[in-house]
Length: 83
Length: 83
Length: 147
Length: 147
Image (cartoon, rainbow over all chains, first blue to last red):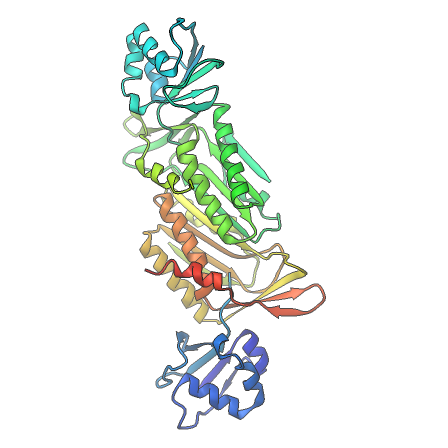
């Protein structure tokens, strides 16, 4: 899975994007979040406020319980603030 | 009283404006309309549809029953269509 | 900053926006009315009531400035003969935030249609000309701003 | 006619309006968002999600074109560092009549604020910088267009 991060989340994680092999038991966006948090404390900081996280699978907004199957890219970012 | 006309009313009356001495018994906008209609048939044509006439006394919109006292200029015109 | 102009010369949205762009506001809205080539129309002719029309537009601009705390407000209306495709009216508003700029701009064009002393004639390709009738839908839109 | 642009170069309402001015419509509306000098802010920095942001803006433009039968729709958003006073976003719409152009323009900026993948950072005069928080009022305004 390719992970991409934006804004506050990108700064906390420390990279724009990264490629990671997921463990077999990770099937959802929420599962990815929990697994990344277990990998390194900086993810726990980046994902500290779940209510302020948004997700996109292959550039489509999805909810935290969305299934990863068939997707290549998971984007994790705060609520948008353009305009 | 100075009368000014615009748009369809101006074309029907045949002049942009005119100065007229009012008979003593004319006190309101509606009175002016009736009196002008009695002066010449072209006013009857110009004022044929009362629902489609609007009035301004000294550049302030007024209703047909407005009193003329203290005013110098009566404008008679159709509903506005700018923009 | 308020600017109200009635002119027989061509007008331009781009020029109308210029004085609003550096007032410190975060939002500018504009509306431009253009002479449309409706069924055989080749030109419009706009008549106004010199003196009164300026008062009408200034009163509307003052009301918008106060009601939405605008930083700036521009109302430009062309009169005389206007070829199809040319601009008839430009409204532009500047405010701190978007809601104020957008609402004030809509208010100004809706109320200009019913409250300002302009009359519009359509010149047709066959050489005839006819006065445009006032529309009931204009009254309805203008009415919603009265509260 | 639809134009969606994301660019790191300065943008201009006047240039955005040009392609809409000769489509035969009677109405053009525009909204311009400008970087405001809020309490110590000297510049904004706009980040986006290349690919997804373009899709977001195209989807909004398509929805506006269909819902209001627009003749034209322009959405231009700047990214990167933007000095106070410079334009961040320009929306412009062209339609037959004013209601369609005005409503579509308000819809596009309201929904862009909540639906398009942009993130805004404020650079302050003391050298610090902070990410702008999403506003609940933006959700409220965007919500009123869903039906």
